[in-house]
Image (cartoon, rainbow, N blue to C red; front, side, top):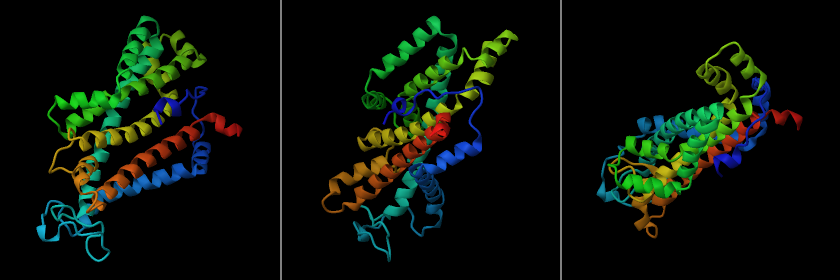
Amino acid sequence: MSIETALDPLPTSGSRPAGSRAWRRFRRHKLAVFGVIAIVVLLLACVFGPLVTPFDPLRIDLRHRFAGPSFSDNLFGTDQLGRDLLVRLLMAGRISLTIGLCAMVVSTAFGTLVGITAGYYGGWTRVLLMRFVDAMLSFPQIFLLLVLAAFIQPSIVTITLLIAATTWMEVARVVEGQIRSLRERDFVLAAQTFGASGRYVMMRELLPNAAGPIIVAATLAIARAILMEAYVSFLGYGVQAPTASWGNMLNDAQQYLGSAPWLAIFPGLAITLAVASFNFAGDGLRDALDARGDLH
Protein backbone atom coordinates (compact mmCIF):
# COMPACT_ATOMS: atom_id res chain seq x y z
CA MET A 1 0.00 0.00 0.00
CA SER A 2 1.43 3.35 -1.04
CA ILE A 3 1.41 6.40 1.17
CA GLU A 4 -0.56 8.36 -1.41
CA THR A 5 -3.26 5.68 -1.62
CA ALA A 6 -3.69 5.66 2.14
CA LEU A 7 -3.61 9.44 2.47
CA ASP A 8 -6.03 11.74 0.74
CA PRO A 9 -5.83 15.32 1.97
CA LEU A 10 -7.75 15.53 5.23
CA PRO A 11 -10.43 18.13 5.82
CA THR A 12 -9.12 20.69 8.24
CA SER A 13 -10.82 23.70 9.79
CA GLY A 14 -7.88 25.37 11.45
CA SER A 15 -8.01 23.14 14.53
CA ARG A 16 -7.37 19.45 14.96
CA PRO A 17 -10.04 17.00 16.16
CA ALA A 18 -10.45 16.81 19.92
CA GLY A 19 -8.00 14.32 21.39
CA SER A 20 -10.69 12.29 23.11
CA ARG A 21 -12.70 11.81 19.92
CA ALA A 22 -9.59 10.90 17.94
CA TRP A 23 -8.60 8.42 20.64
CA ARG A 24 -12.08 6.81 20.54
CA ARG A 25 -11.91 6.47 16.78
CA PHE A 26 -8.44 4.95 17.05
CA ARG A 27 -9.56 2.40 19.65
CA ARG A 28 -12.36 1.26 17.37
CA HIS A 29 -9.73 0.27 14.80
CA LYS A 30 -8.80 -3.15 16.17
CA LEU A 31 -5.96 -3.79 13.75
CA ALA A 32 -4.42 -0.42 14.62
CA VAL A 33 -4.54 -1.25 18.34
CA PHE A 34 -2.93 -4.60 17.59
CA GLY A 35 -0.29 -2.81 15.52
CA VAL A 36 0.62 -0.41 18.32
CA ILE A 37 0.84 -3.25 20.86
CA ALA A 38 3.01 -5.29 18.50
CA ILE A 39 5.31 -2.30 17.86
CA VAL A 40 5.75 -1.68 21.59
CA VAL A 41 6.46 -5.37 22.24
CA LEU A 42 8.97 -5.49 19.38
CA LEU A 43 10.77 -2.37 20.57
CA LEU A 44 10.95 -3.55 24.19
CA ALA A 45 12.09 -7.02 23.15
CA CYS A 46 14.83 -5.69 20.87
CA VAL A 47 16.06 -3.13 23.41
CA PHE A 48 15.97 -5.22 26.58
CA GLY A 49 15.83 -8.82 25.32
CA PRO A 50 19.55 -9.22 24.56
CA LEU A 51 20.36 -7.86 28.03
CA VAL A 52 18.48 -10.62 29.87
CA THR A 53 19.21 -13.63 27.66
CA PRO A 54 22.09 -15.91 28.71
CA PHE A 55 23.50 -16.17 25.17
CA ASP A 56 26.14 -14.02 23.49
CA PRO A 57 24.99 -13.08 19.95
CA LEU A 58 28.57 -13.38 18.63
CA ARG A 59 29.57 -16.57 20.45
CA ILE A 60 30.32 -19.36 17.96
CA ASP A 61 29.64 -22.95 19.05
CA LEU A 62 30.25 -25.29 16.12
CA ARG A 63 29.22 -28.30 18.21
CA HIS A 64 25.65 -27.01 18.28
CA ARG A 65 25.21 -25.88 14.67
CA PHE A 66 21.68 -26.04 13.22
CA ALA A 67 20.06 -27.00 16.51
CA GLY A 68 16.31 -26.84 16.00
CA PRO A 69 13.94 -24.67 18.05
CA SER A 70 13.58 -26.03 21.58
CA PHE A 71 11.74 -24.88 24.70
CA SER A 72 14.46 -26.34 26.89
CA ASP A 73 17.52 -24.62 25.39
CA ASN A 74 17.63 -22.40 22.29
CA LEU A 75 14.05 -21.25 21.83
CA PHE A 76 14.47 -20.34 18.15
CA GLY A 77 17.32 -22.78 17.50
CA THR A 78 20.86 -21.96 16.37
CA ASP A 79 22.37 -20.86 13.06
CA GLN A 80 25.14 -22.24 10.85
CA LEU A 81 27.78 -21.14 13.34
CA GLY A 82 25.99 -22.35 16.45
CA ARG A 83 24.90 -18.88 17.55
CA ASP A 84 21.58 -18.51 19.35
CA LEU A 85 19.02 -17.37 16.78
CA LEU A 86 16.69 -15.57 19.18
CA VAL A 87 19.31 -13.21 20.57
CA ARG A 88 20.66 -12.53 17.06
CA LEU A 89 17.11 -11.82 15.88
CA LEU A 90 16.67 -9.27 18.66
CA MET A 91 20.05 -7.65 17.96
CA ALA A 92 19.15 -7.53 14.27
CA GLY A 93 15.85 -5.91 15.22
CA ARG A 94 17.75 -3.09 16.88
CA ILE A 95 19.51 -2.38 13.60
CA SER A 96 16.49 -2.77 11.30
CA LEU A 97 14.15 -0.73 13.50
CA THR A 98 16.78 1.97 14.04
CA ILE A 99 17.32 2.28 10.29
CA GLY A 100 13.56 2.42 9.74
CA LEU A 101 13.00 5.10 12.39
CA CYS A 102 15.98 7.26 11.39
CA ALA A 103 15.20 7.01 7.67
CA MET A 104 11.61 8.03 8.45
CA VAL A 105 12.77 11.12 10.36
CA VAL A 106 15.08 12.26 7.55
CA SER A 107 12.69 11.52 4.68
CA THR A 108 9.67 13.04 6.46
CA ALA A 109 11.58 16.20 7.37
CA PHE A 110 12.92 16.72 3.84
CA GLY A 111 9.65 15.75 2.15
CA THR A 112 7.72 18.10 4.44
CA LEU A 113 10.10 20.97 3.67
CA VAL A 114 9.74 20.45 -0.08
CA GLY A 115 5.98 19.96 0.10
CA ILE A 116 5.23 22.96 2.31
CA THR A 117 7.44 25.25 0.20
CA ALA A 118 5.83 24.13 -3.06
CA GLY A 119 2.30 24.24 -1.65
CA TYR A 120 2.59 27.67 -0.06
CA TYR A 121 4.46 29.64 -2.73
CA GLY A 122 2.93 27.96 -5.79
CA GLY A 123 3.83 29.30 -9.22
CA TRP A 124 7.24 28.45 -10.64
CA THR A 125 8.45 27.31 -7.22
CA ARG A 126 5.77 24.64 -7.15
CA VAL A 127 6.33 23.67 -10.78
CA LEU A 128 10.08 23.20 -10.37
CA LEU A 129 9.88 21.35 -7.04
CA MET A 130 7.00 19.06 -7.98
CA ARG A 131 8.45 18.22 -11.39
CA PHE A 132 11.64 17.22 -9.58
CA VAL A 133 9.51 15.06 -7.27
CA ASP A 134 7.82 13.49 -10.31
CA ALA A 135 11.19 12.83 -11.93
CA MET A 136 12.42 11.06 -8.80
CA LEU A 137 9.22 9.02 -8.59
CA SER A 138 9.66 7.89 -12.20
CA PHE A 139 12.56 5.67 -11.09
CA PRO A 140 11.60 2.39 -9.37
CA GLN A 141 12.66 3.05 -5.81
CA ILE A 142 14.22 -0.32 -5.04
CA PHE A 143 16.37 -0.22 -8.21
CA LEU A 144 17.41 3.35 -7.52
CA LEU A 145 18.37 2.34 -4.00
CA LEU A 146 20.37 -0.65 -5.24
CA VAL A 147 22.23 1.46 -7.81
CA LEU A 148 23.17 4.05 -5.18
CA ALA A 149 24.12 1.37 -2.65
CA ALA A 150 26.41 -0.33 -5.17
CA PHE A 151 28.63 2.77 -5.35
CA ILE A 152 28.73 3.64 -1.64
CA GLN A 153 30.51 1.85 1.17
CA PRO A 154 27.68 0.16 3.08
CA SER A 155 27.15 1.09 6.72
CA ILE A 156 24.19 1.76 8.96
CA VAL A 157 24.46 5.52 8.39
CA THR A 158 24.81 5.34 4.61
CA ILE A 159 21.99 2.81 4.23
CA THR A 160 19.74 5.02 6.38
CA LEU A 161 20.52 8.08 4.25
CA LEU A 162 20.09 6.17 1.00
CA ILE A 163 16.67 4.88 2.06
CA ALA A 164 15.65 8.39 3.12
CA ALA A 165 16.89 9.77 -0.21
CA THR A 166 14.61 7.39 -2.13
CA THR A 167 11.45 7.66 0.01
CA TRP A 168 10.83 11.39 0.66
CA MET A 169 8.97 12.08 -2.58
CA GLU A 170 5.56 10.68 -1.63
CA VAL A 171 5.67 12.59 1.66
CA ALA A 172 6.35 15.76 -0.35
CA ARG A 173 3.34 15.14 -2.59
CA VAL A 174 1.02 14.48 0.35
CA VAL A 175 2.19 17.62 2.18
CA GLU A 176 2.04 19.80 -0.95
CA GLY A 177 -1.56 18.80 -1.62
CA GLN A 178 -2.56 19.46 1.98
CA ILE A 179 -0.81 22.85 2.16
CA ARG A 180 -2.32 23.93 -1.17
CA SER A 181 -5.79 23.21 0.24
CA LEU A 182 -5.05 25.22 3.41
CA ARG A 183 -3.27 28.31 2.12
CA GLU A 184 -6.50 30.13 1.17
CA ARG A 185 -8.19 29.51 4.53
CA ASP A 186 -9.23 32.49 6.65
CA PHE A 187 -6.64 31.92 9.38
CA VAL A 188 -3.82 32.02 6.81
CA LEU A 189 -5.19 35.14 5.13
CA ALA A 190 -5.56 36.79 8.51
CA ALA A 191 -1.92 36.09 9.39
CA GLN A 192 -0.79 37.49 6.05
CA THR A 193 -2.96 40.58 6.53
CA PHE A 194 -1.21 41.31 9.83
CA GLY A 195 2.16 41.18 8.08
CA ALA A 196 3.34 37.69 9.06
CA SER A 197 6.30 36.46 7.02
CA GLY A 198 6.02 33.46 4.72
CA ARG A 199 8.19 31.42 7.04
CA TYR A 200 6.01 32.27 10.02
CA VAL A 201 2.83 31.31 8.15
CA MET A 202 4.31 28.03 6.98
CA MET A 203 5.79 26.96 10.32
CA ARG A 204 3.22 28.40 12.77
CA GLU A 205 -0.06 28.31 10.83
CA LEU A 206 0.10 25.74 8.05
CA LEU A 207 2.38 23.06 9.47
CA PRO A 208 0.38 22.41 12.68
CA ASN A 209 -2.82 22.07 10.64
CA ALA A 210 -1.13 19.61 8.27
CA ALA A 211 0.26 17.51 11.13
CA GLY A 212 -2.30 14.72 10.74
CA PRO A 213 -1.30 13.62 7.22
CA ILE A 214 2.38 14.10 8.06
CA ILE A 215 2.10 11.80 11.11
CA VAL A 216 0.33 9.14 9.07
CA ALA A 217 2.88 9.46 6.25
CA ALA A 218 5.71 9.11 8.76
CA THR A 219 4.19 5.93 10.21
CA LEU A 220 3.86 4.35 6.78
CA ALA A 221 7.38 5.52 5.87
CA ILE A 222 8.83 3.48 8.76
CA ALA A 223 7.27 0.32 7.36
CA ARG A 224 8.61 1.06 3.90
CA ALA A 225 12.11 1.82 5.23
CA ILE A 226 12.24 -1.47 7.17
CA LEU A 227 11.18 -3.35 4.05
CA MET A 228 13.71 -1.56 1.84
CA GLU A 229 16.53 -2.24 4.30
CA ALA A 230 15.57 -5.92 4.19
CA TYR A 231 15.64 -5.87 0.36
CA VAL A 232 19.05 -4.25 0.16
CA SER A 233 20.64 -6.34 2.92
CA PHE A 234 19.16 -9.54 1.49
CA LEU A 235 20.86 -8.76 -1.84
CA GLY A 236 24.18 -8.08 -0.10
CA TYR A 237 24.34 -4.30 -0.52
CA GLY A 238 23.08 -3.31 2.93
CA VAL A 239 24.19 -3.99 6.49
CA GLN A 240 27.29 -6.20 6.43
CA ALA A 241 28.32 -9.08 8.71
CA PRO A 242 29.09 -9.49 11.52
CA THR A 243 26.43 -6.85 12.25
CA ALA A 244 23.07 -8.57 11.95
CA SER A 245 19.91 -7.16 10.42
CA TRP A 246 16.74 -9.00 9.50
CA GLY A 247 17.63 -8.61 5.83
CA ASN A 248 21.12 -10.11 5.97
CA MET A 249 19.87 -12.89 8.27
CA LEU A 250 17.56 -13.89 5.41
CA ASN A 251 20.49 -13.66 3.01
CA ASP A 252 22.54 -16.01 5.20
CA ALA A 253 19.62 -18.42 5.54
CA GLN A 254 18.72 -18.89 1.89
CA GLN A 255 21.20 -21.74 1.27
CA TYR A 256 19.81 -23.65 4.27
CA LEU A 257 16.10 -23.46 3.45
CA GLY A 258 15.85 -27.22 3.02
CA SER A 259 17.87 -28.33 6.03
CA ALA A 260 17.24 -25.50 8.55
CA PRO A 261 14.14 -23.55 7.49
CA TRP A 262 13.85 -21.78 10.87
CA LEU A 263 16.84 -19.63 9.90
CA ALA A 264 14.62 -17.91 7.32
CA ILE A 265 11.22 -18.31 8.97
CA PHE A 266 11.91 -16.26 12.10
CA PRO A 267 13.54 -13.21 10.41
CA GLY A 268 10.80 -13.31 7.77
CA LEU A 269 8.11 -13.32 10.46
CA ALA A 270 9.84 -10.44 12.27
CA ILE A 271 9.89 -8.33 9.08
CA THR A 272 6.26 -9.20 8.32
CA LEU A 273 5.12 -8.37 11.85
CA ALA A 274 6.99 -5.05 11.97
CA VAL A 275 5.85 -3.86 8.53
CA ALA A 276 2.24 -4.96 9.03
CA SER A 277 2.09 -3.39 12.49
CA PHE A 278 3.30 0.01 11.30
CA ASN A 279 0.86 -0.13 8.37
CA PHE A 280 -2.02 -1.03 10.70
CA ALA A 281 -1.05 1.81 13.05
CA GLY A 282 -0.88 4.22 10.10
CA ASP A 283 -4.35 3.18 8.91
CA GLY A 284 -5.71 3.67 12.44
CA LEU A 285 -4.14 7.12 12.72
CA ARG A 286 -5.57 8.04 9.31
CA ASP A 287 -9.07 7.18 10.51
CA ALA A 288 -8.60 8.75 13.95
CA LEU A 289 -7.37 12.09 12.58
CA ASP A 290 -10.05 12.24 9.89
CA ALA A 291 -12.81 14.53 11.15
CA ARG A 292 -15.24 12.83 8.78
CA GLY A 293 -15.15 9.86 11.18
CA ASP A 294 -17.57 11.78 13.45
CA LEU A 295 -20.20 11.62 10.73
CA HIS A 296 -20.35 7.83 10.70
